[in-house]
Amino acid sequence: MPKAAKKPAAKSASDFKNFTPYKPKKGEEYMNDEQKDHFRAILLNWKSELMQEVDRTVTHMKDEAANFPDPADRATQEEEFSLELRTRDRERKLIKKIDSTMERIDQDDYGYCDACGIEIGIKRLEARPTASLCIDCKTLDEIKERQELG
Image 1: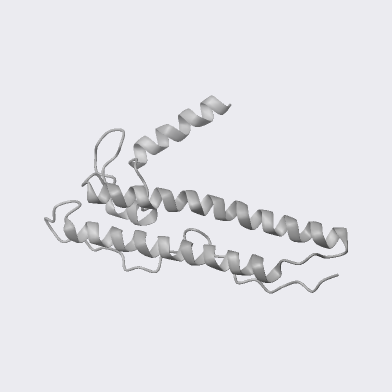
Image 2: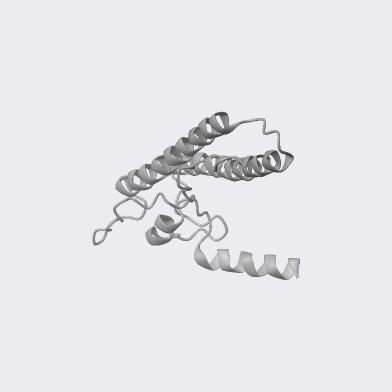
């Protein structure tokens, strides 16, 4: 049996939380330039972390790729690589979503619900920077989805 390689600790997509929460000032306009800059920085940091993880995966797969004579060892390695690639595919889709969210910031569309147009809110956006629905519309969306799926 090959010795298990030490992999870097897996990071989840939500490990971008190393930021200072935005403190709105009294009477401050919603989604002003300061707030947009705050969310732009969060999104860029998150995207950067995801891109670093992609690089680590490529390096890991190159370093660990081996043609094991034992079929069980080969199968284990292939399964590990498959899981890593599936995770990276999800992260690739998330990077696309981050990019489209950055476009929304540039177009002054960011922070407002796609369904009803109200403010999504700073705290919700800090918890989920790519959110495009307010909490009420998202809840209704999830209820409809559950009803359709049974």
